[in-house]
Length: 251
Ligand SMILES: Nc1ncnc2c1ncn2[C@@H]1O[C@H](COP(=O)(O)OP(=O)(O)OP(=O)(O)O)[C@@H](O)[C@H]1O
Ligand SMILES: Cc1cn([C@H]2C[C@H](O)[C@@H](COP(=O)(O)O)O2)c(=O)[nH]c1=O
Image (cartoon, rainbow, N blue to C red; front, top):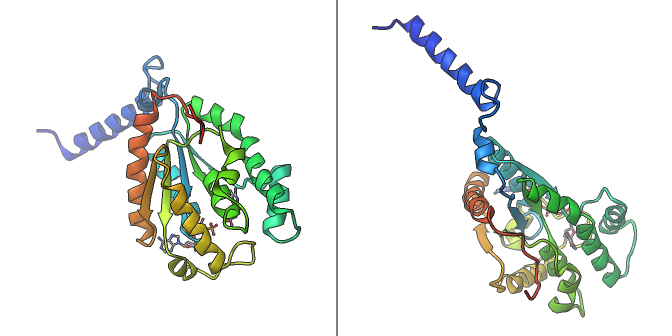
């Protein structure tokens, strides 16, 4: 029989050894659990899309946190990335501080993604899974909701970008979304425009060459999170041994 005190010391000792082992302090040559998980494997490119207020930023943050807690390497990214020179131009346009001709601003949104491609490729190659809040699909859905812009024309500048392994569409009606706080003062934040955007997303989702998954974004934050996490974990395993594809490219 061992006493409660002995059992406690044993458990503490065991937990400390396990922690040291996982940090490779005791056996540095033995890979840690996360090394086994990631060795030689690329990370997955996961994109969250949806209309304004669908919950993309909330879910992107939660997913990165949950994946890290599971031992995966994961980082967030968002577009537009407003901190670069191009991003500042786009940001000022969205805040209505400047006007930019419609074709021109579409190309700037795309250029903002292209300027991040070397970084995206480097992260994926080093085993980091990227959770991206908006990508080329926002570009196409928003610009093609303007007068005289075809889906085909809008896609062209983004042809060849790293292809997402998974695109999660957070589905919510514009009415439901507007209950989450009035649309703000930024450009495009009107329910009429958002309805057009929603239709364009539906057209984009007909493309079976992409791994679109629709998640009901009107559920609780927890339920939405669990659904996205499950889809993401499966795709991280699948993407590991596949090369990164090219978006909307023929081959
Ligand atoms: N499932 C949910 N249920 C209720 N409220 C939510 C849910 N998800 C997010 N919200 C709330 O809705 C608001 C918008 O969320 P969030 O900023 O994540 O959306 P978004 O899609 O990134 O928006 P935008 O595209 O307009 O920047 C926030 O106040 C957030 O707390
Ligand atoms: C990437 C991208 C975005 N947009 C639009 C969509 C939204 O209205 C804003 C970004 O708002 P957020 O709160 O920072 O998500 O920009 C676009 O028109 N084109 C694009 O390529």
